[in-house]
Image (tube, rainbow, N blue to C red; front, top):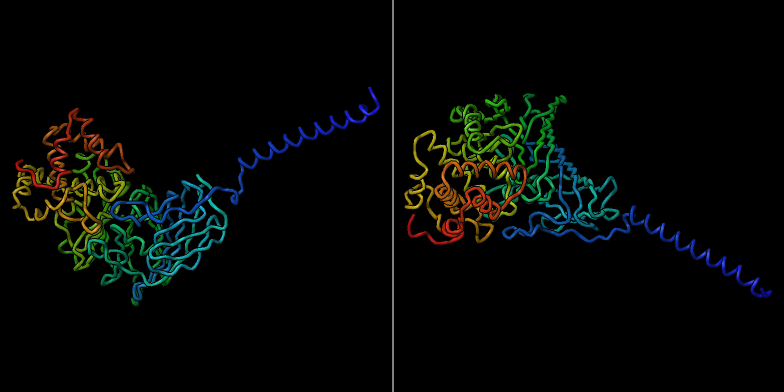
Amino acid sequence: MAKWEALIFPRLAQWALAAVLLVTTSTACTASRSHTADASEVVAKPGAAGRGDPLFPTLGNGGYDVSHYALALDYVPETNHLKGTATITARATQGLSSFNLDLAGLTVRAATVDGRKARFSRKDNELIVTPAKAVGDGHTFKTTVTYDGAARMMKGADGGLEGWIETDDGSTALGQPSGSMTWFPSNNHPSDKATYDITVTVPKDEDGDPYDVVSNGELIKEEDKGDRVTRHWRAEEPMASYLANVSVGYFEIHKGWTSDDLPVYVAIDPDEAEDAEDVKDLVPEVIDWASENFGPYPFSSVGAIVDHLPGLDYALETQTKPYFEEAPEETLLVHELAHQWFGNSVTPRAWKDMWLNEGLATYAEWLWQEDQDGKPAQKTFEEFYEGTHPDSDGIWGFPPADPPSGARVSDAPVYGRGAMVVHKVREAVGDDTFYDILQTWTDRYRHRNADTQMFIALCEEKSGKDLSGVFETWLFNGKKPASI
């Protein structure tokens, strides 16, 4: 070996070894970063401001799914002042540089994401939260929003009142389709269901008597703090935001059980006590009847709230305890309790599928009358077709599965003609298959979301028949069929 070779080759070997070590180290570091990427390296973009609903495009938000809301509220009925802290547990479905929550009115004081201070801004009914570091795709994160102000009601797309509504002795919160955002920030769309803890603190009145607070689920704790009382309600089964309710006022509380040992909690405003005397007994009776027809009751408690709110002109199927603005008629109670299966447990993916809620709940009224009063559902169907039924006006305005706008989502075709669709399915498949369809529907999609095509597919699966003619004529066609 020449002298220059002896000098150069060892150095080349050292350089080669150094290069190998550098590549190996670099590869190891790259693998580590990809496995435990810092939030600053997350590929992130803003979540969508809106869920893309065809009828209500601005409701809800994209980029995450909520699993739980913990709401701590402090409410003073005399001033209608509300203070709230909402802790929202969600999973990111994309990398999030920012995300939106639906919130109308109220003043936001602070926001954090995973315990770190977050920036926030407001635009219309959107609260835009920008975390200190981006949220990674698939990461479960907690957002806490502190807010306060004079809670307000709003006029819905259909002209009805919703939101935080003052009553003569307190308030109630009603959210269909958008009013929930007047009292807590949320992903306000039925496609994103979550569990809830709702804790409400209210003062005692000048006589030292506490206001009652009723909400969804079960009352798990009540604490007397001298001049104030705190009640903690928990809804352990998933719930769409429009079904959340808090009712504050003076109520007569009636507790009981169904035949299946399901706890019953009925709250009745004293002004409605005489006319609503039968409600506490009817609730368990209807639940027992419905369970036989629709399958096991899907929640861990049931009840009702009968308030005194003249002029509201509607009831709402708030989860586990439907809300009535006055003492309800028997069929209305049946309707709202049937929603616990149809709408609350099995919830539509989009608002255009609301006929699945209202058509099935309306048909539950027909079935109740058939079983209890002896009036065949066929007779009720004929009255709707002929226009002699008091609720038949306007049912041919549009196809039940295709409301032309959000303002029409609660119109007559969704209810009455929706029920007619259900009856024609029953007629086409026979009673045994029909009840099998209903019970499979409530079991297969229990606590989930479903849509019209899924219902059609189930009807054809269970019957083994092509039912396209039935659905085309009664569900999708805007015109009144020439015959029945």
